[in-house]
Length: 443
Image (tube, rainbow, N blue to C red; front, side, top):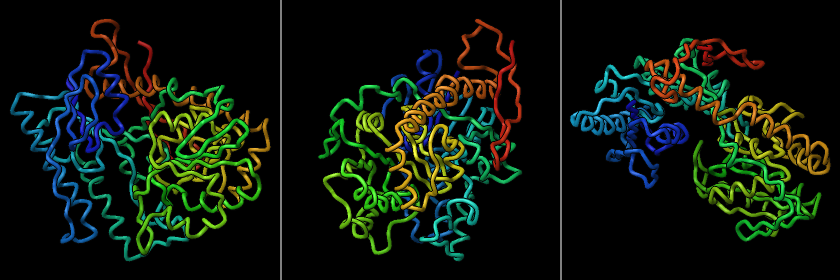
C-alpha cells in the first residue's frame, strides 16, 4: 500500500504506526512535513517550504485559520509535485490541527483520508476559564470559537477521523462525533517498563544526586506552565520541604509556552513561581533539568516514589500513559482528562488540580503508606498491559485503515481472509459520551 502522512512536526503522533508499516517492508511510506532533522528508516520525508506565519495584520480571531491555510497551501504545492511525479497514495493520514490536509483532497480525490482530531475548543466547558486564577475574558470568546475553523473545514472534507481519548472526543459537538473513531493510543510496554533495581541505585539528574535513601517526587511536562498544573506543583514544594528532609523533587520540562500564554510582565513561569515560593524551597533538593534525553526521563520515572501529573481539562499527555506503564505511583489532577486513565485508589490517586496543600498531603501520605504505594505501582503496570498495549493500538489502527481502504496493512496478502470489520458502540465512562470502537469479527 501507498501511505501519505502529513504533520508539521514529523513524525508527531504517527511515530508508532509509521514504524509498524515500514517494519513490514511491504509499504511505500511518504511523509510531508516542515523541515526538521528527524529520520525514520524506510520513510521518504518530503519537506515543504515553511510559510511565513506573520499574522500581525490579521484579526486576532482569524489568525489560527490564516496560519492554517498558509500551511495548507504549502503542503498542497509539495503534494502537487508528488502527483506530477506519478505518486498516488491509497490513504492520506495526518493531523488536522495545523491545516496542512485541507487542500490535499483536491489532489487525490479518490484516496481515503484519515485525520487526527485532537480537541474542540470551547469557552465554557473545558480548559478556558477552568482556573479562577486566570479568568476567561468574554471579549476573547470569539477568538476561542474561531480556533475551531480548521476543525469545521476538516470535518466536511469527506474523510474519516480519529481521536485518542473518550474525553477529547466528548469535546466535539454531537453532529461531529459520528465522523470520528476513538483510537485509543498505546505505549511501548517494553521500553516503558518498571526497573525493580531502580530504588537501589544512585541516580544523577542535572546537578542533583538521588540516593537510595532519598524519597523522589517527579513531575514532567513539555513546558512548565499552568495548563499542566506547574503553578500548583510549585506551591506544594514548601510543604514538602518542611515535612520531610529526605524528599527530593525533579521537575522535567522546558521554559517555553506550549499551551496558554506566558506570565503578565514577561519572563517564564518558572521565574514567576520562584519569585513567589523560592524563598521557602531548599534548592539543594529541587532540580529543574529542562528538557532531558528520553533515557534520563525514563530513569527518573523508574526511580520515582511519587509521580505527579496535573492538567487543565485538555488533551492527555503521553507522559501519563508512560508513567502508568512504568509502574509509577501516580497522583493525578482530578479532571476528566486524567480520571479516564486513573481509578482513585486502584491504579493511582486523584486530587484537586488547583489545591497545592491537598496535593502536598496526598504526596506525603503516599510516601508514608508503603502498602498503598506498592499496590498503585502494580496496578498501574497491570492497567497499562491490559489497556495500553502497543500491539492492541496497532491492530486497531490497521483495522481502521482496512475499513477505509479495503486492505488491512498488517495482514500478509493472501495469507488469511481479511476479518470483517464492524463498528460497535463502546460503553462510555461515567459522564462521558459513547464513542465508536473498532472490533474485528472472527473470519
